[in-house]
Image (tube, rainbow, N blue to C red; front, top):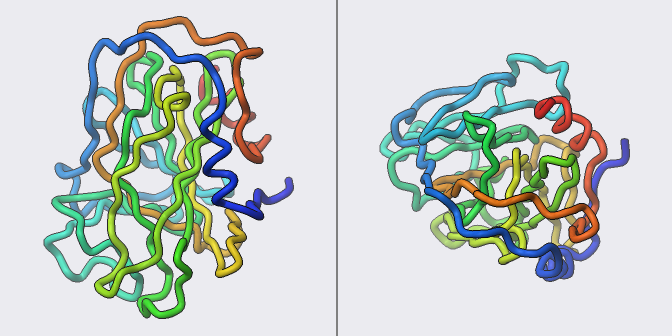
Length: 246
């Protein structure tokens, strides 16, 4: 399987503004903030339930069952993220995805849902802040519809400030935010000074997420002909999503 790459992340980010028709208004919303789990550590295959949603954590290689993939970082405990560069403006708990791992988001009732906003930051593998580019990475959200098709949304993650990496609030473009998904995969890219970004390359595709705002969707999923597939989707992800939703 070819590794995904972005030769121009800014162009990729802009391209995601095109796409499918909007979905009707949601029934209710939920905010996933991880605060109740601060301090927990997760291996591949573990999951977290909150507000009617299930977040499953996986290594990129499905064979690496039980390998460390993330933690709910307790921002009140300075011992977390020793030796790495984690966001310094988090509150309570947030989820840190390590080692090129993947976060899967699904409703516990198998209902379709929409992604309205998310707080996100890059997590640097090196504690020294001087070597990171202006855009250190990006967070890709790959949303799967009930018919097996998918859409992509890329969120550029800034390099560190003088104090360190910072959470930013991201609202997906209208097309993505108003589309009903049965599952969403989140995974990280690491970028270099030329603007080239790679995923699943060297365990550097790490990211932090918090305050994930999701809304139930009460509408039919658009037909495949109305969808735009953004960027370079991963066939392996599509196959994995079909197995999860079967």
